[in-house]
Image (cartoon, rainbow, N blue to C red; front, side, top):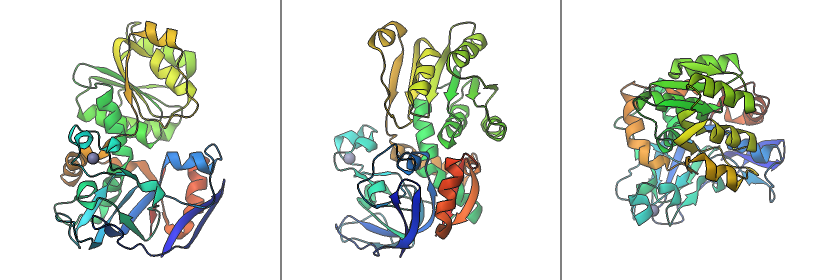
Length: 340
Ligand SMILES: [Zn+2]
């Protein structure tokens, strides 16, 4: 089968990879209908994250089940399925508490690489959620968004305790930040401030429910949030970048007693203990337990309440994956959908 392999920073190739086979009796094999390039794929692409030789890429996917292992009972061939970037059993104590991304049997889908024609999905019964019927083609981008960016944005909004009466600030205008705006709107936030300097992303943030846009960054960005919140800071702040600057901005934009939901994959971020101590802020985040939210998100998408698929502003055939990485790296695209 054809699949994306990252050979070195900036060197994305689409090449022949071995067809996936059932290894564990709990596995399924899917034919990938759509995959995409993640902001986190840019870390190794830019050489920020070290590569140990050529690596298969991709961890977001929707597709049709082709084959299941002997112990798979609920997932069946022919179903259209959505899964998250962590495969999880959905039965252990950690999964039962809603933290499937910390499952004791978890498998990182990025090690399998779903930017490909087919993929092996470990722990299929726990990992995959089938749609009620075969979805219309125009719903596929939104279902694919549920696989990571929407689920991650949703978790960030929940971790930041978004809800009625709350003012929410979102740091980061990538697909996850934009989906966090959408989530905050669905969760009933009163005011949603998107921090973005890019006109097309501001427009999408507004379409998803942002009430205010702040274009400043750093100390000026913090000052702008304070100005909009009577000098107090936001109740809920989503951090969706993963850098020192964004994390600092999130922490300082939150009022005492407020909550930060951080989901940007952290790179060289350190928090000074004294500032953390004095902030009186709740911090919660990490790799999102997307699986917890998938049934709900699939329902909202299939009944057309939400349309997170709008984050995909470039669709390319799988063979042009290298151009997709370039477009995201150069911020010419918010998010790139790949069709195998
Ligand atoms: Zn588990």
